[in-house]
Length: 449
Ligand code: S3P
Image 1: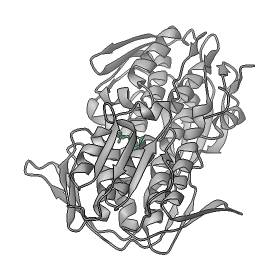
Image 2 (image 1 turned 180 degrees about the horizontal axis):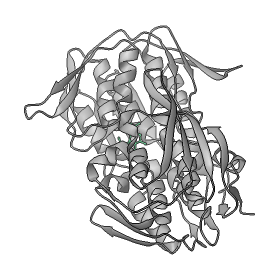
Image 3 (image 1 turned 180 degrees about the vertical axis):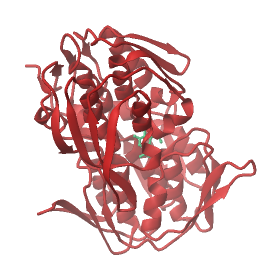
Image 4 (image 1 turned 45 degrees about the vertical axis):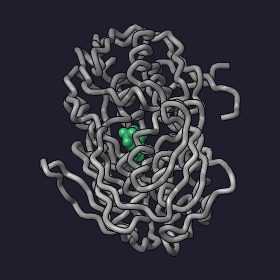
C-alpha cells in the first residue's frame, strides 16, 4: 500500500435498507486462480474477488508462467486462465510479493514446495509479522527447503523439489490454510498425501480440487479423527468456477442491519458452505431475525440470499468448537455483542492473535476505547452488552487489518459519538467498494479530511 493513509469515520444516522451483493469469496478466489494455473486447458472464473489479496495471487500465477486474463462481459468481469499442468510451474524471475494475504502466501508455498524451482516470497508489514512455520515445517517433509527470518517469518526463500515424497500429516492447529498448502503440495507428489484434521475447517480446496478432476478420499486416523487423502499427480483439467459472495464480507452489512434501528436489508448470493456459517448460527442464537431464501448450489457451493431485520440481540456463550466455522467473523461478532443486552463469551480464540493483526487484543482495546465493558480471560473474549448504544467517540488503530477496519465502522453506526479508524486502505484487500455499498444502504461513513 503506497497511497497515503485513509482515515474514515462512521456516525449514527437513519435506518439501513436495500438489497446488495458483496464481492466474491476470498478463499475460493485464491484457490480458483491457483488451480486454474495448474490445470491443462482453459479455466473461466466469474465472480472473482478483485481485492488486493487476490490480485496478488493472480500476479504470482502469471510470474509462475500461467496465462491469466481479465475481460469485461455483460455479466461482469470474467477471468480466463490457461494453466501449465501439474508440476509445470516455471521459476519466477522476481520476488513474489503477496501483500497482505496470508492465504495467498501459505497456499503458494504449498504449490512451490513440490516444483523444482527457487522463489522468494514477501508481503506487507502485517504479513511479514505472521507465523509461517506452520506451513514450512510440514512442507519440508515433502523435501522442500525454506529459509526465512527469525520465527519463520517472511521474506522466505523456497527451494522446491521435483522428487517430492508423499506426506501424512496431522494438523496441530485447526487451519484450512495449512491443510490446503499440504494438499496443493501433494498434487505434484507421486503417491498419496494424507492430512488428518481433528477439527474440520473450510473445505473449499477439497471441493475445488474435485471439480478440477483430482481424486480425494475421506479417511480417518487410528483414533477416528477425520482426514483427507489426495492421490498425487492427477491431470487437472481447466474448469468453469462461479465464485459466490463472501460470507465473511456479508457479515458486516448483515450485523449493521441487525443493530441499526428500523433496518431491513438483503445480501444476495452469499456462500453458505457449512464450514463458514458459524456467525449465522451464533446470531440466530442471539435472537437475530435472519432469513435465508432462494437457496441454491453454484459452482459446487451452497448459496442463498440473506435478509436481516433489526431487533434486540441478547448475549450468549459461543463454544470454542465453533471457532473454525467463523474464524474471521469475531471482530464483527464482538460488535454485535456490544450492541446486545447481556454478556457474550466467545471461547477459544487463540488463533485470532496471529491474523492480519492481533484481533483478540485489538478488538478488546477498540471496544474499551468506545466505552464497552470487555475482558480477555485466557483465550476467551467477553463482551458485556448493556442493551444501550456504546459511547463511541474514539479513533481505532486498525494495523493494516481489513476486518478490524470494517467492524469498527459498523460500531460507529450505532454509537452515541462517531467512531473513526486511522486507516481504511486495507479494506480493499477483501471488500473493495465497502464504503460505497454501505452508504448506498443509508450508512453515514465518510473520509476524515
Ligand atoms: C482461510 C483460512 C483461515 C481464514 C482465512 C482464510 C482459507 O485461516 O482465517 O481468512 O482461505 O483457507 P487459517 O487457516 O489460518 O485459520
